[in-house]
Length: 285
Image (tube, rainbow, N blue to C red; front, side, top):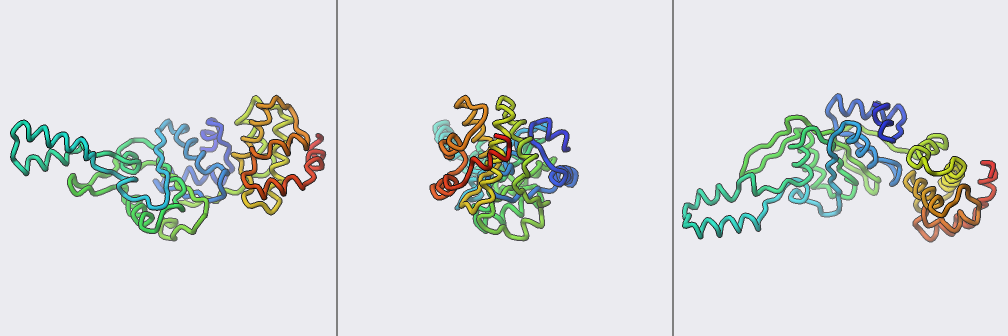
């Protein structure tokens, strides 16, 4: 599993590789929790690529409900069909109702699409943004990998999709949902692993620049920031500097490009007050 994921460019430690393997072997959802930008969403993409399966994504938000996540009826097409039937002289109410709620008028949202697609990887992104009612609904669906549509009956997955749920921990997700899943906490990587990720994702960036940017981000995470930068921001920063033609970075250039890595004014001001030259000096700048 580790080798398959690394072939896609996604580097994993042993704990995450084992979690992914068990999720596949046991057909259990994998619940990924951690700060934003540490690679949770990217894991689902890597799994889809490694398994040669489509990635089906459900982006959660406040107020999301079953019609947005599971299925809905195509009312405009149903209305057109009704008018066409009436124009053709069809008056049998039972027949019309049966035709209106035919499978062809059903719009499959991400959850139903994942149940009907084999194989597939279902990403339920930022479940912590949804409300309690949606959590309960999702728990029921993931327990049986089936859904009952009153007009059509029960639709069950022939083969359960690989399910990855992510949470940035803006609120606690209920224990009942976590118990249904395998759990993995995504921490910020150490220097060596983060550097390896940057080098893998941005092979065109000079080795010296990648090392310096990684060192700067590691130092920034040690500060009391509102939003510590994730691996995604490390990659963005290195990419931005490379776009400027830099093969290495000094303190002045680092300060000028802080907008690539820090997204709060207070964090940027704190970074400007640090001795970035000293951090770079440690890496032989």
